[in-house]
Image (cartoon, rainbow, N blue to C red; front, side, top):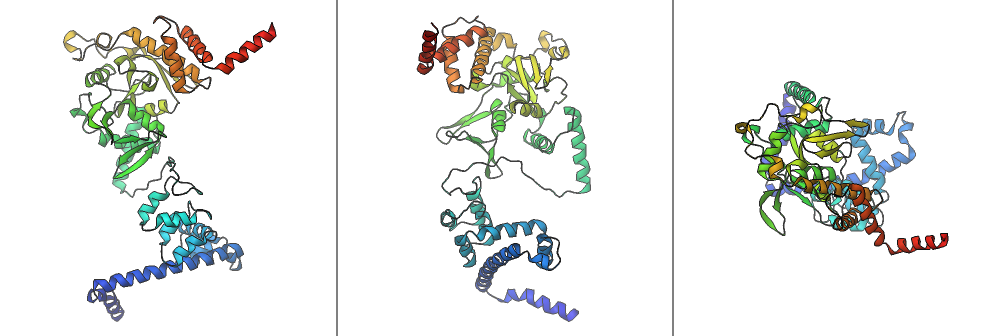
Length: 451
């Protein structure tokens, strides 16, 4: 036994006596042989699948056979079979693996998108790239796409696995309980991890007086398709429209590649401080007790004409903020008198929520002043709300948002500010009909026929 150990030791220490050039040369030769073996294995795996060889040996399944014969676990076995069956229809990719041009890992990625008519294009596009670059090349493209086709971001939930000690697991469960108590219910995995990320990204709460915008993460938006990308950990990751809308509510602008500039946040610090103190630094959804990871939300969205006035801003926890932008929650009214509605009913605001925690004497009032006196004319806000409602009503008629905004603005110029929503909507509808010659002529024809 001791003799065998000494011999093994000599094998593994023998590399120290060889030059680095020889070691590199031998590793490259091994890689070439390994790729050729992978190509040969793919051919045999196809034969195993078609002839169901595992049945001849009394095995219950293909996976059981591959685990016993090749030592592959279920996940690795499934992937090997998938690649083998794909290569059976992609001779160009199989040849690239067999002659050592591409590694098995690279070919595995290419088989996710390549088909018979595009395989040559994918091999050409992958030439000279490492596996990480090929992964980025394939990402966002579906089977049958070409390398030159624009990628479609994969926004499906990702599975992330951590190995932690028992002590850390205990603390994690305590965190879950604290957040569940705050929000009035158990959080799903995404909400839990998001809350813990917020705790780090927000920094020390005591160092922030409520004036700094919460979202200072670098986000870019494509002007053509409006897909948003967020920079994190050295990579640009696609995010959903909901994530973009959440960030847009309370963000700092740092310019763009074309027009870089200094950071400037949408909501003025003094207004943000006022809203933070007015809403007592907690979520304004009735029944929610969350006082951490709080976002500023625009009640009337910016793209519908809503402004940064304090009465158009309210505080929401990250969970309710996401629910609102997902369409599972609506908030209307003028802050702080809000109406919160779910699809299954309406929850009126708690009268206690509309009152300060204690009477505010002049010396205790926030230095930012009162919303009524510093943040715009209430009539302007009411008019904006009516225009927003009119735009949304036109959208229900399958009118594009950009066109609905134009029709409403044209109608608003013809009416006084005290016009009702119904008057504004009817006027906008008339503008829409006047812009549709076919609609007008058809209506006239029907009327003449009735006469």
